[in-house]
Amino acid sequence: QKEVEQDPGPLSVPEGAIVSLNCTYSNSAFQYFMWYRQYSRKGPELLMYTYSSGNKEDGRFTAQVDKSSKYISLFIRDSQPSDSATYLCAMSRNQGGKLIFGQGTELSVKP
Amino acid sequence: GAVVSQHPSRVICKSGTSVKIECRSLDFQATTMFWYRQFPKQSLMLMATSNEGSKATYEQGVEKDKFLINHASLTLSTLTVTSAHPEDSSFYICSAREGTPEFTDTQYFGPGTRLTVL
Image 1 (cartoon, rainbow over the protein chains, first blue to last red):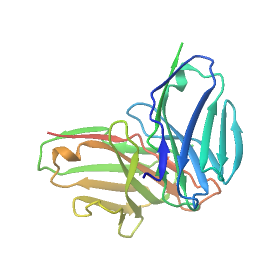
Image 2 (cartoon, rainbow over the protein chains, first blue to last red; image 1 turned 90 degrees about the vertical axis):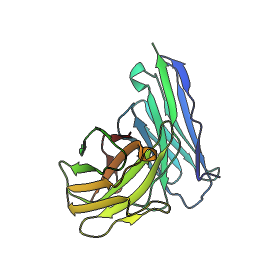
Image 3 (tube, chains in turn purple, red; image 1 turned 30 degrees about the vertical axis):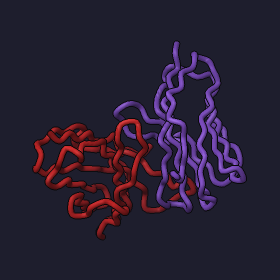
Image 4 (cartoon, chains in turn blue, orange; image 1 turned 120 degrees about the horizontal axis):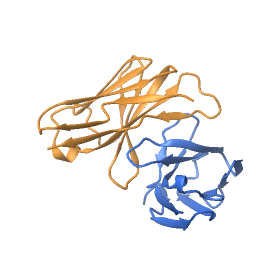
């Protein structure tokens, strides 16, 4: 069993839709949770960073962490075609620790 | 924001040759750099962690004699794939972390290098 599970998609939505991306994990020691966006043939770009449980909002993006369920989410409001990319969740046990990535979800936002 | 560059962005080589990939932090000093490998539609897999001035720490299953890592300065790390074979064809991505971790402790990723071994 992988430490981090993420549905690879692909996920296709119309422009303006609310997108929900999710990851589950098995190791309760994870405390730091991140979402990265990766455009085709590019390196990942950090979108959101969360410590422990709770919500964090940044513009159209909201990250949620539920440690009791070992479940994290990224919501994208008013999705745009420019949001089309692969979204990777990542987590670590301690600050500066090794990042464990999910498989990535491929998102396509259609105009 | 912090910028990490990689060179080359794409390389094609013959089987049996060695290939060197450079990773540079352009506007900050990186005491720690990471090398990842990513197969199509798959996640990033950490290969090794390198700290400036010391030997790299390799993940289980990664051959240190095949994937040579040198972190000679605070802004440069290199990955050399020795005696490359077609199964080494992949997307190699580096990341760099500043020396003094803030709360975010962010890893900044390079744009990646696509290696194709014929």
